[in-house]
Length: 241
Image (cartoon, rainbow, N blue to C red; front, side, top):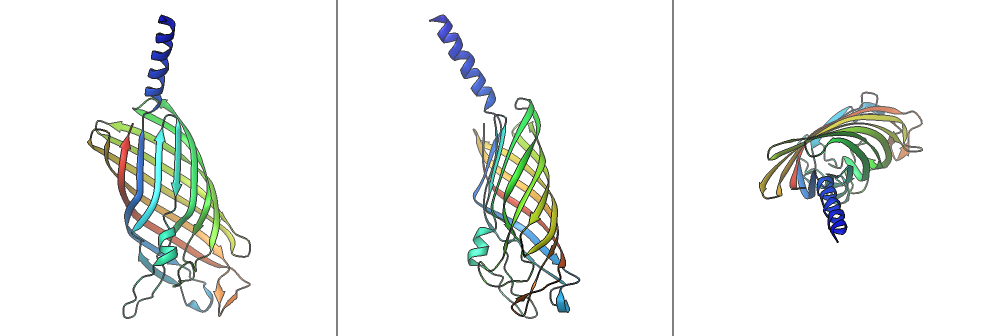
């Protein structure tokens, strides 16, 4: 009996120790920020530079518990399906969809329990960027993204923090000639009530993409270059372990 109780106590302690971390739920959540696209050699010079506000609604879960890091992101799905910018005088009416249609990350961290942990992760999914100043819902073309990154976690009293830096490759036959991107995501979570609180995530994304644009309804034979940059501040609920 004593051995059984001891074993259960050890198991309970292990599980309790393992479940330390933060689950940021941007589901639903929001973001504010901007997206800019520069394409100096776009055919005809039509879309050499344009920008828009970031789409407000996002759908994302960013979770670090035990030793595993998981992320599910569909932040671009809402605006890809429903919304475009409202046009004013002398302004383009373009879709706000930028980012993940459906992306996932899986990683593993090591370190000192709830105080500090660091590790890496792999990512794969489908993303979109409005490289042609598209105005139709679901008019954006999706491309495959895959890559890797580093993640670090640190606790400061009621504050929990995470930082992620990653590198991605973009591919899509007959659309993306070549592409790559670098991004940074920082998360700050604060506990307001017991194990519940708010999460804020400042993010910066930079993409360099050579793609085949559509000109007069036909796909161009020569690729155009585009630089896509976005800075957003995401916010949502959080649960701490």
